[in-house]
Length: 175
Image 1: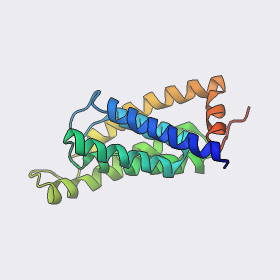
Image 2: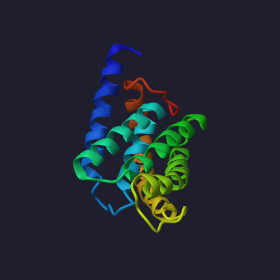
Image 3: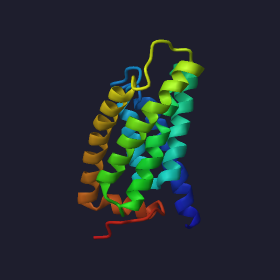
Image 4: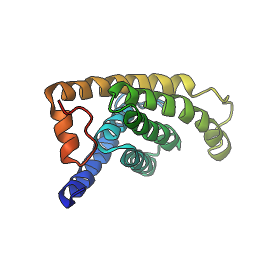
């Protein structure tokens, strides 16, 4: 990766974090933040799984500090962000797998991890281990659908490959 691509990755990561923090209150109720999943998937496709994990972590920490969001800001984002990027790479750039990774990572794993975090660390009583599953799955399906439509439009115009190339990311659709 050349120096210019590294700088562009940092700029893109910073922009995605900023956008993620700003748009996260849109459609948000506790346990459901669809716009965060849009950012996770877009970051996974543009920058890769590790940058997506970093992006989700930074957004979660900022939201917790500035907006008083509970630890769901982290448990509801980091697993999906990482799995989205990993599945996107494993399946050689098929966008649907980035969405599936987000749904499985956040909708299932993140939801199940959220129960002990919210119950034992945050002190929220009356939860069951499946409490967050419907909310997280619904949020990831909404956010995943938005990201899929957006990235598919970029792919059809060829801009997705251009962006990935300039960012020094793996380009799967060279045509």
